[in-house]
Length: 126
Image (cartoon, rainbow, N blue to C red; front, side, top):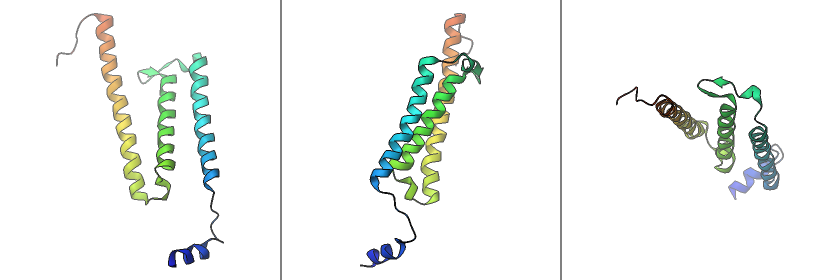
């Protein structure tokens, strides 16, 4: 078969990872990020409790680490690594844009609702 012939030619040039190696690599990477999130969630360092762009720095770290995990899961389990560059960008960047937009909306609305509860009046009438 033609496909087998191409594979035989390139086998000497390309080092293929086994599926077992890929699975262990994904497990280790996602476990490290999750462990960092758990440790930060338990200890909550005071240095990360400062306000950064309307939210605690620790919350920003959680959001960024969650986006990194989502990107890596998309990259590895949806096989984006093997796709063309334009398809990878279209899928991944669209998802990242939508997540960032959702975070922005949640911060805006959450800040408004918090101010209504603390001040006791509505300052914006829609």
